[in-house]
Image (tube, rainbow, N blue to C red; front, side, top):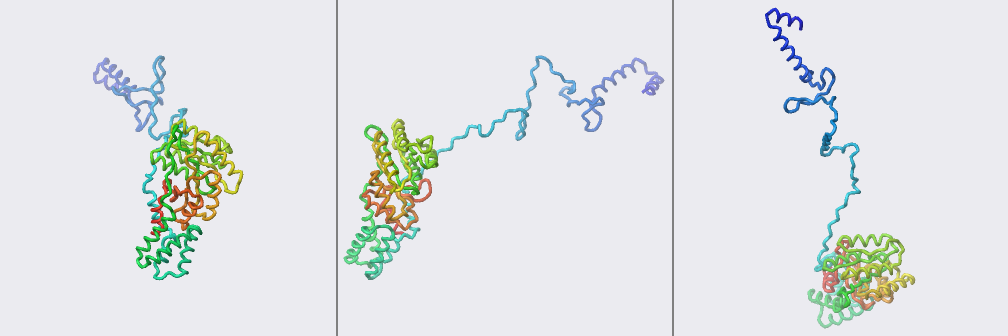
Length: 414
């Protein structure tokens, strides 16, 4: 630096000009950025921010808070990055859950048409085997015995089987059995007569004259699918535009009320239940009917605990439930749920329940895919009440009003 100054003086440059140039160089050196490639520090070690518009810079090491100046807003974290330390985080379980969309039950009309196909695939002896025997050129006594055995194996019952065989013998003698189409028509007419299409199979679900809801009590033994049937029946009624309240009067099985409430919630139906296990089922049933009346619903469905027909204490309790309910509203229906595969044991159940609870209709579950379709005839004969509903499978809408003609046609298509 001294050599440069001496050279300029020797060249005759005025001293005033040299002083001005020196001052300018000092100012520039103080403002210039770091000189090292990629360096973030000057010679003193200070970190310098990038130049602002206009050329000014900020030395972050000397930044101070100015009193009265609002703090700069915190930068929002980038999407997907972790929240800042100390930030409040809303746990997932504290978020408001979205209400599930209500299910729309399938229309009731035409449901039994599905049963025809399932019966046809089940190999029911009331179909192919009966037609096969009746189509023979000459029917011997052995053939008639085979027909009767087929009917008995299908749980038609001894009395109805004998009636059907006698009616067929008479028609075969008079009309003959040459034409297969005629044989099928003849057998269809006789089976339909046994099933009895004249019975009133309509569910009584109309409100009473004083505006009380129709009350449907559902009874049966363990394992017949009773609670599931109540849930499916609620869907049938909702599909028909009815308003429903469910009563979980099965207080002995811990999961029964939960199961019923799940069925109801899917279609927007409220369930009345006890807050403790082992509560008085009659009280729960009464509360359900009372709430149904106060809400102005059309139907109250009351589920009861499964009970064996030979347990006197449980059957007496069922009588108590019936008496308590009728203090609030009359019973419109008492539906007995039977497993179609139980055969003659189902008839014993039906007999006792009919005496205790005054059964008005039968619900046959597990009717699809079974060779025991004759139970329809036998149970109607035993109780003198009709089969009103049949279970077609395990789907939520696999419960249908019973149609005698569709049922017989399904058997004969097997």
